[in-house]
Length: 131
Image 1 (cartoon, rainbow, N blue to C red):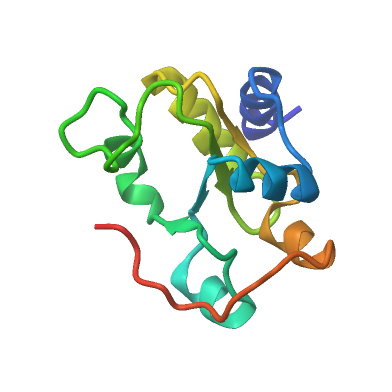
Image 2 (spheres, rainbow, N blue to C red):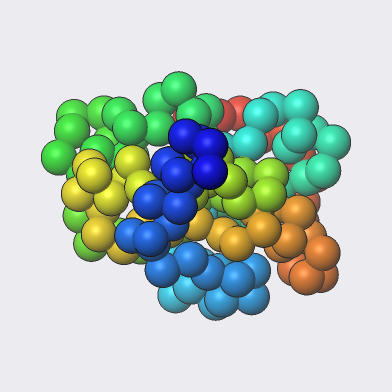
């Protein structure tokens, strides 16, 4: 097993990952969906309605429930679902969110592409990322 595969396996062992329809239901109950996909992918493929777009480079600062740069309203008990293209980078990001103290952070199995394939709502992409 490669080092990155081992890292991914360890990250996922701490998560209760969710399928697209489950993520949609959790979002309707107040879970925060965070889209970490590159701008080009969001432009080409669209976005999940209501998702917060966040560049990976600022993720830890914006998802630190104790930090001064956290998203408004973010607390340690906020359910957060990270989304990337296919569910790999989001697993690593969700594990990072756990280490920051977000006990209910997870990611979307199959990523945005699984969401779209499940026939769930998608809006045109290109939203600005949270600074």
